[in-house]
Structures are given as structure tokens and as C-alpha cells.
Amino acid sequence: MNIHYLELIFPALVIMISAAVFVTRYKRCPKDKILVIWGALLGGGGERSSKCIHGGGAFVWPLVQDFSYLSLEPLNIEIQAMTITSDNKYVDVSMDFSVQISLEEEVMYNAADCLLNQSSDAIKDMARHIILGHLRLYIASASIGELGDTENFKKAVHGIIDGELRNIGLSVTDIRINNLSEITR
View 1: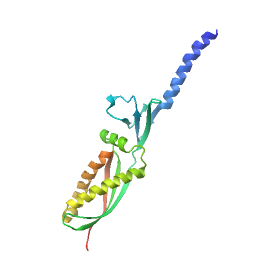
View 2 (view 1 turned 120 degrees about the horizontal axis):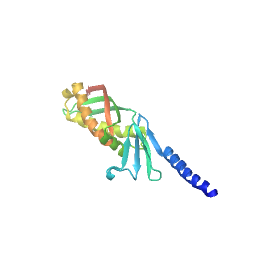
View 3 (view 1 turned 90 degrees about the vertical axis):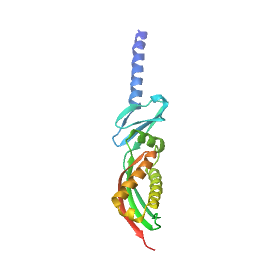
View 4 (view 1 turned 60 degrees about the horizontal axis):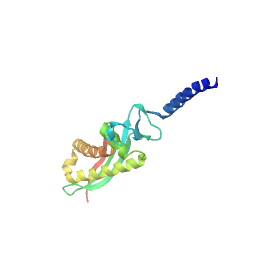
């Protein structure tokens, strides 16, 4: 009689433990985040060091995989600089940039590689350095007359900076020019 109870209890116990593991290790991704899973058993032939999921969920294997989230909240970055143009005129530049992690597959994986587990302040600092450096390079290659056309200036800056930020997983969503004026000495 005891043997029959063991035959019933053991399979039930295995099913309950399996269900508990599945329930606790299945991770859903909120709409304002990207779920990043890394470790073994990712599939895809080992091309990537992680797997990114936006919208949906995935099972995270115990002991061999781990996970974290990347926030999709926009980051506002203020840039203020004094720099020189190609015709040796000094300009005062004050701009606001809105950047966020892109959902484009290649860029999203760049974010997983470069930004995972970084604080928003660290991400802002990284983006600020990239923006400021490339903004100064662009202004140094332009004349004061070329900078006067603000729409073309914004398009050119957006193209240059967005291309560079994509290398770390970010994309420019908005640019606002607060001040772009020549400094007379």
C-alpha cells in the first residue's frame, strides 16, 4: 500500500517543482524596458553574448543564465560650450538633446553590450562626452555663415551624433537649440 502512495507522490512532486521553477524563472518584459538575458543556452549559434526582448517574455534557465533590464526612458542632456568655427570665430552653443535606447535590433544589442547595469547618470555622461566632442568637431569644420541656418545645422548635427550614439545603443530623439551665437572679442 505504501508503494502505491510513493508512485503517486513522486510524479506529483516532480510536476510541482517543475511548475514552481518555470513560474519563478519566466520573466516578462514591461513596455518601457528591454529584457536582456545572458549566459549559456541562448541559441543563435553563439553570435551574440546576450538576447534582447522587448514586449513579451522568456524563460531564464536557472544557474546558467541571468537577466537584467534596460530602461527605455528618454534622457535629457544639456550641452553648453564655447568653441571656434573654421573661419576663426568663437561661438557660444547651448543645446538640449533627448536620447534613448533604440529598439532597432542592432542598436539594441549595442546597448546591451555597452549600457547594461549602468546608472542613468553614467549613461548621460557617456552620451554627453560623445555629443560634445562631435559637436565641437562639426562646428570647427563649419563657417559662421553655415551655422546661421539652424535647420540645416540641426539636421547635420543629428546625423553625425545619432550615428555615433548608435555605437553604444542610443539614438537621438530630439534636438533643441537654446543659443547659437557668435562671441565678439
